[in-house]
Image (cartoon, rainbow, N blue to C red; front, side, top):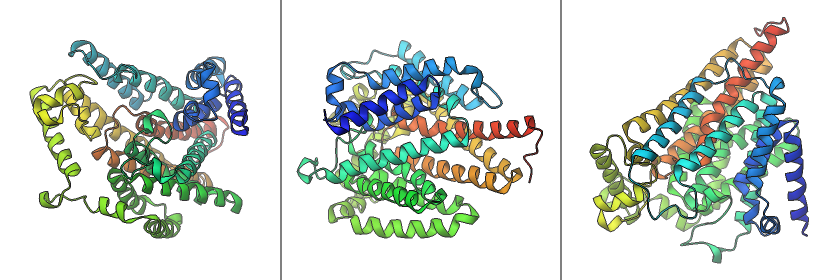
Length: 438
């Protein structure tokens, strides 16, 4: 057995056993497995051949840990926050449409139907929001994401160009990242998280580690040649300037400048040519860009003809009725697909979730003013990272279909983790007889 295989099975066992006593270890392990997909790596295949179901085992262990440690867990002001209730309402709508809409045919034979997949996503997401409820655990989750970025970034760097598909990096990471656009969007979304971990780190060795995570992550994004991810990073840079904490503003500006120069240095002619095709001028668009516009127009017609939605998973069998030559083509937009498949109510609930996510982050940011300086800085730094990360992934969603991609929902619900961490901190101060005020 290889050293990587031994390391994997050791960490897997540690997370499974540890989850019974410290459920957040199960969350960390599940998240790492989701992103890296050890079963799809050469060093993890022997365990997959033995029937080991990594994510399922980790999820069960985490669930058992939550039950066993229930009295020790702290849920903030409520067992279910409004954003979590909206998430459950969204899932209920998906299942309602699943039963009343035409049957989905010829698409999900080997993978889960969106309704089943979203159910699994919601179960894990709710476990996460009820376990990652203090800054220490959230900080650990951020480091898991940073490490995942490093591991996947190194694999991308080591992938020979001959394995690229049409000049783009494909097939890296978990099942949701099999296509270049999805992988690039994920890597782009964790860049702000890696960046804040670099700024928060006190020791130079830890900073060097975070710097390596960021460099390999950025390089992987460029290798994907994804225009959607480029737009996400660009909007993320704008958001970083807008939301930057005062004490970190100069450092963040310097990081953005250095990151931009580094990205330009790593870029090649093909990547730059693809980026230059991002335009609203019909004559300057390439075929891929213009086809997206046509697909979005067709999606708008679907909503007009079916306000309640065509049903989850039914886009591919419906688009051919509107554009015959695009039979089976993807929508290339999270928002268009959500509106078309889940109707006016579905897109309204999704947008409301986005509003609630920012509302939870803003409440933490506004409330941090009343905390002691060091603790206020901690909350504001996590607030900043999550705001920018959400801006990146939601901008990517304009041109990339991710409504049933797990990472979108994980990032969308992380504000609940920060909100609970804030509420738990306030409650802890009150119970201790102290005052959270400066």
